Image (cartoon, rainbow, N blue to C red; front, side, top):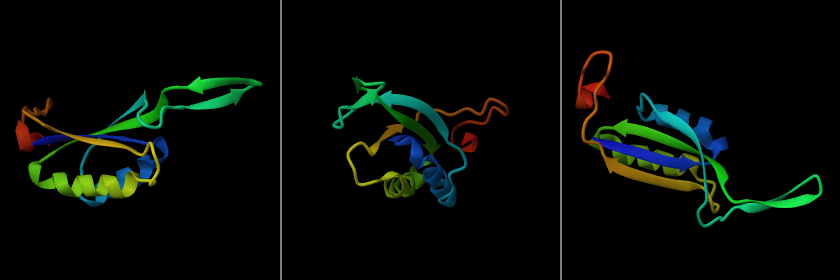
Length: 112
């Protein structure tokens, strides 16, 4: 089992969610986060004063999945979250040691 974590731009969420449903993803977790990478933030003007925005708003999408679905999910994320610009995000894939469904006590792939 794997945990896929994708950092994406907020306006891409609806497209990503719909595309993931199309490849069989049954559930995702989304968290609002802030961060920076190569893009290094930007400056904005507010009421005549210029200020630096170091941390940009992003969304963290987490998907717990079976090993055989990883490639399809990653391809879907790359295709739908990309804008072909700096700051599109990253995808991280981690091994998932154990999953337990709280309501039923099912474990591992049965809990997904």
